[in-house]
Amino acid sequence: MEFIFLCSRVNVLILLLTLCSPYKFIQSPMDFGPLNLLQTTHEASLDFGRIVFNTPSAVLKPQSKTDIALLLSSLSASSLSRVTVSARGAGHSIHGQAQALDGIVVEMESLPVEMEIHKREGKDGISFVDVSGGALWIEVLKESLKFGLAPRSWTDYLYLTVGGTLSNAGISGQTFKFGPQISNVLQLEIVIGQGELVTCSRTENSELFYSVLGGLGQFGIITKARIILQDAPEKVKWIRTFYDDFDTFTKDQELLVSMPDLVDYVEGFIVLNEQSLHSSSVGFPGNIGFTPDFGTREEPKVYYCLEFGVHDYQLDHMNIDEVVRGISRQMSYMQSQLYSVDVSYFDFLERVRMEEISLRRKGLWDVHHPWLNMFVPKSGIVEFKDLLMENISPDDFMGLILIYPLLRNKWDGNMSAVLPEVGSTDQVMYVVGVLQSANPDTCNHRCLHNLLQHQRSFAQTAHDQIGAKQYLGHQPSPLHWRSHFGRRWDQFARRKSQFDPNYILGPGQGIFTNLHSASSAL
Ligand code: FAD
Image 1: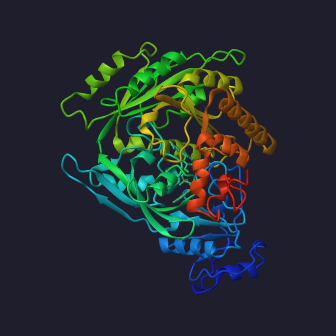
Image 2 (image 1 turned 60 degrees about the horizontal axis):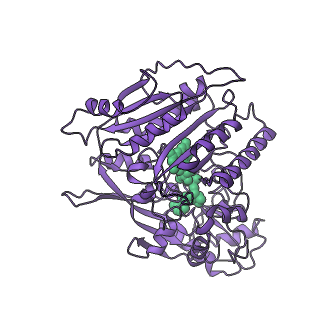
Image 3 (image 1 turned 180 degrees about the vertical axis):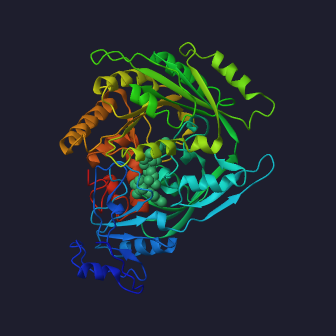
């Protein structure tokens, strides 16, 4: 049962020890001063994946960044301590990445949200927002829209925290144009492993800045981020085109990402069956008249849907319909299979919320989510798609398979996010999101286990044969992590020993197992 130690000046850890906590390995009591810890909460061992349920020994609901600094400095001052700490944003990870088995989970959403918008007028002025690490992107959107502004780079779903997506990359249909969310950060405020509060940017404490962006929560806890804003459009023209041929589909996607002056958003997905056509259309308010023949179970036929968006704000002197006509004339979609709608910018960015509401109504939101996301080099995208199709049955697949191109030059190679190693000069790479759901009513524990094993071996093959890299992924051992990082490993491990020398942070990722030496763990 959950209960709060209300007494503010209590040595909470001594209390936890006394109350038969699992801190058997703590050799000396530590003074956490006035920290308000909980003895675990339901949420702290739960995430969107519903696959891993690691219970921490305590939860911190910080009321200020000082609480976080105090916790980490107390832990790192005790050299005998083996207590680990995970920041938990909105808990939308898949494999327990924000969990801390027998450690302490810091619930970032408890931090009071602070947001300050800076609107810079003039040609060279950059607008930005300073926002707390625990704020949700939907909150950033709502506040910045009051000033006619908005971040440039998004995720598809906005009920994720700023600190959570910046610890990964943060990608969506705008990434080809502005890079991932981590490429749109000007400054960060971090509590590093030793408990020190550090401000960093490309010019100030830059090594920490680059480490934390895409750093999987390993180097510090993001308490504040400065995010670039742009003028927000009012409306978006949202277009969908359909294909029965993969090459034509990807060629059109690549055509669109080569026109960043006209196109603002590019994504796409595989139309596997009737269900995938309809469920992916919940947010799309247009009437899709596409009635494809999906073949038979023995000989299934799949299709591809390309999505793109054009903002109205940049087209002061142009008619948006003419712009879309001009673009679509160069495309090669199936005859008459173009559908377009006008939506408000807010509704466009909120589109996945519509799907969430629909799935919640059907009881299909809080189910297992064995999702797999991979970055795939352009040279291997056909082979990857073929391998994927050999490994799924379109008839039974519940969920969505996203495929869309990204451009390497919009990513900063000094940040911690891992991309496929460069084998050619090609700028284009793809992200493929196999966003599968498994309803516990029809897929029991064994079924889920088999599904995950199958997925692991698929991801390994894609890595070994094609050079694909997992995004938001889970690796079964530190050795696999090392292979995931490839040439980037030494840098990652060195940064860990610099910013979190006691290996306190981010245990849920499973990157470092030995608390006192990254390399000896491997
Ligand atoms: P959590 O799951 O709580 O944490 C993730 C990791 O970040 C953990 O390691 C945690 O310790 C660390 N962390 C959290 N907060 C902080 C902090 N303040 N400082 C340091 N480390 C921290 N991703 C995309 O890129 N694009 C998408 O379009 C996209 N769509 C999604 C849609 C849905 C429905 C879901 C469930 C996920 C989606 N994601 C997408 C994935 C999402 O970006 C990641 O799972 C992200 O980590 C979620 O943020 P969170 O706040 O829930 O983080």
